[in-house]
Image 1 (cartoon, helix red, strand yellow):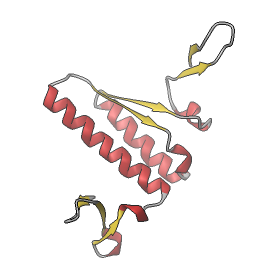
Image 2 (spheres, helix red, strand yellow; image 1 turned 30 degrees about the horizontal axis):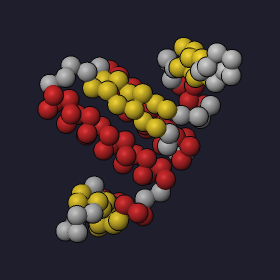
Image 3 (tube, helix red, strand yellow; image 1 turned 135 degrees about the horizontal axis):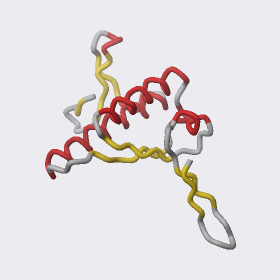
Length: 120
């Protein structure tokens, strides 16, 4: 990904002879992967500029746009980040993610007691 002369993001498509194309041509899954890459770069930049010992950010949804192969790539990336002592919070409503995430919080609304938080 790069910024073009009009100050817009574009993709360098190496599967198409390195030609440039608009980010608007990305599929939902590709757009999610680009967003993840940007979040990683931003978290790295913030961590290095603040000299923080932890690198932490949230991903809000996007997993519903992924096919199984793409989800596997994303999870491998997240596992590698965990090995590097980085923390990634995922906000999602996709049920199959519960099986793949080792520690999760579920928040349920309770009219009588307010929101209830459960550690899974």
